[in-house]
Length: 148
Picture 1 (cartoon, rainbow, N blue to C red):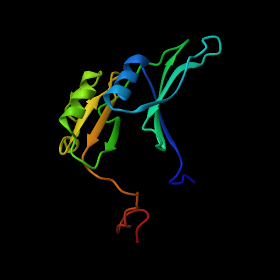
Picture 2: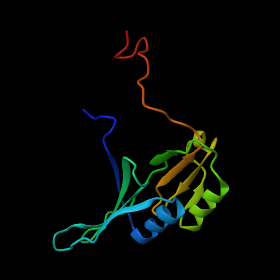
Picture 3: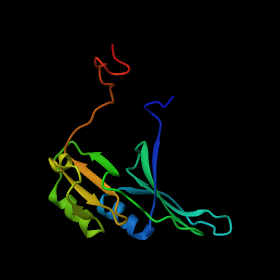
C-alpha cells in the first residue's frame, strides 16, 4: 500500500542541469538536496535533486552521460504547487529572471488565481493561491463502478 507519509520523487530528464538548478534554486527558492556526476563507462547519469528543505517530495533531474533523453513535456505535464496565498509578482519575476517563462495555462482553470511558468526544459509549474488539504476520497456516486 502507498501510505500518506511516503516520499515522492518526480524524475525528469533535463537538457541543462545548470540552467535547471538556477531556475529551481534561485528562481523558486528550492534547495539542492543531492547531486552526482555520472560515469559514462557505467552508463550512470549526471543527477541533480532539488526541492523544499524538509519536504516529503523532490525533483530528480538527470542528463545521460552515454545516451541523452531529451525532455519532452506536454502542456498537461504539470507540477502544481499550492501556495495558499496570492502569487506575488516579485516571485514570478524572480522565477523569470532565472530561466522560467511565464505562459498561459493549457487549461484556463489554472490561470484563475495562479500562474504557469515553464522551466528551462519546458516543464510547467503552476503556482496557485489555492489550498489543498489532506486527500479524501470522493463519495460513491450512483452508477459508478464502485458506487451503489
